[in-house]
Image 1 (cartoon, rainbow, N blue to C red):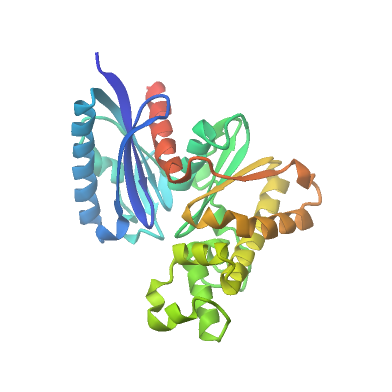
Image 2 (image 1 turned 60 degrees about the vertical axis):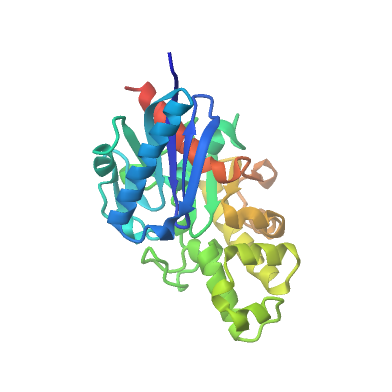
Length: 324
């Protein structure tokens, strides 16, 4: 008798990842590609279908039977309908009946959820949130995502919009976000908008080791570049992550006051500058928390790193299958 596995898919604004995952949360195999290699909806559907077919072949070769799949997508999704309503960082997926279209290509059920929700679910199942009944997960990447775990369950909210911490307003007169609002946390703490801010500072003559790169090839400056520069104490990159940390501290304080959470897990590739932005985050949090003891709030980096979304997608599938 074959062992069982599910497919976990993490479809983010920068990278697309797929993995086979067993019921204990162990990744059996994986693959990754750049999301930019799938520029429109038809290309996305074609690539996803081909990769799901390949995953089925890999499972058979390893002696596993696929029971279902979980899919995480950046943006506003409607899980009950299996549809992506709006994906600001993957425009090709907006208004896409994703599950319906992919179900024509695979023989097992598929389940859809926001990718940041699945980050939180994965960290709660097998990562930094293990043992915590209530948890907020935050992802720092192309955008800023969030997911809430309340009473050990993913909190979906009305219309699948809960946990969207990246679109909490920090500066009412700030930049216009991709979502259409102004001054969202995402415009202050995401890789995309922080790179925009750094380039503006360089254009105004700010001191930085990045200046030569900026003058030679400004497009070469990305989120990963800023992380490396900050870890090497570049003054402008440090200022950028101070801004990231203080914005996060401001919003986390509001969430803690509202829900009384005592565990916050921060992940995503942009969060690799943790040691740089953690101090300003903590300072801002302690300054703003007046109705909740700040020493009772535990903020920590994700344990699962890039695998959190994949494991969360697998957890979504296992939980849904258990209910059928």
